[in-house]
Image (tube, rainbow, N blue to C red; front, side, top):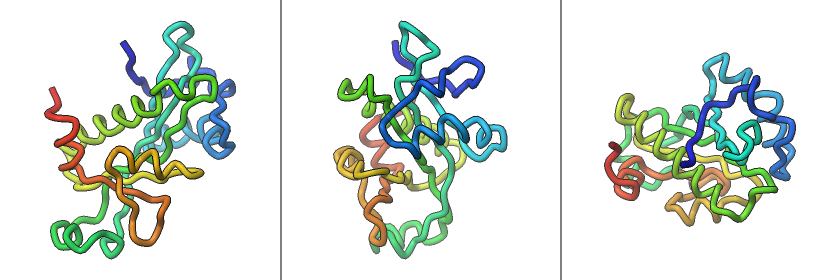
Length: 168
């Protein structure tokens, strides 16, 4: 059974990971543990079950300010007093594991974690920064681009709840 765990620099081989995008590789290798220690982000990894120090993929979660003016009018009105949302800051799959559904699995896992967090500390949106042309991947799962930035997309918690179903 696949499950994500928090990145553990003493266990996971961060330097072996290569998704083909230097910024995502370098974040995992150099910044992820530091940012977690500062309580700025949390990075979760999917381990290869046959060799658990190998990282299949990862994602990073945090919160992000929301510029209401960049949302569609109906959401501006509905969430006029909201200032932040959940953020999937990074999501990447090692090139050795590409095209096997791990990206989708990681995205759904990230959405579940953020949905669970929203049940405790309410926020109406999940935002994603799509790196290097990944916008189509996120749009396939219901994300919509902000009006001012095509690589920054969002989905409402209500839509995530409707698509994932109740958390058990």
